[in-house]
Length: 154
Image (cartoon, rainbow, N blue to C red; front, side):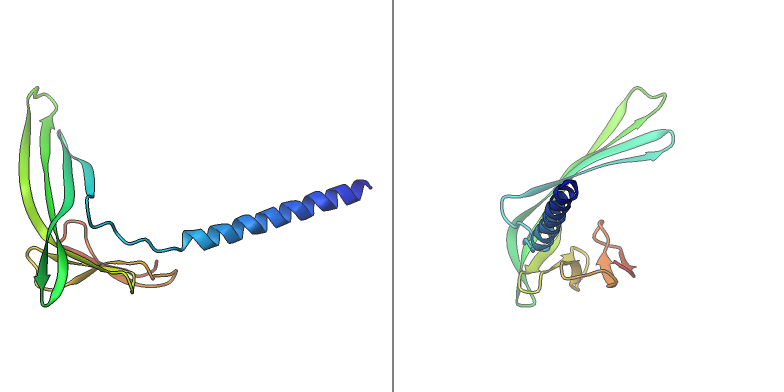
């Protein structure tokens, strides 16, 4: 009887573990498009060049539409500030950056990809590919919208 109770507990625990695994696999792989309306992303950074610190705060948002080569895009803008504070100097200096056009964004919800054309670029760059799996390679657009690079293995 003692062994039967352990068997039932182990069987129940194994079944529960399988249920958790299957539930996780089902829900973690679903695709959700990037929001395009009434959304603001905030970027906080802190850079240091001794003896000074440069904390910055920027927001990014869509404002309006544009058409490039017969394809519709959302216009991406940013604005924010960078503060310089140096040790030994009680005064800090803040530089404000007003609304600036950063480029054009679009997503293809059928292929689960997002694309971006930077303000100083003429070609479209792949920004996100939600179809990638382990072992895939990706050519990517860096966060300052001007630098590109490779990720060889995901």
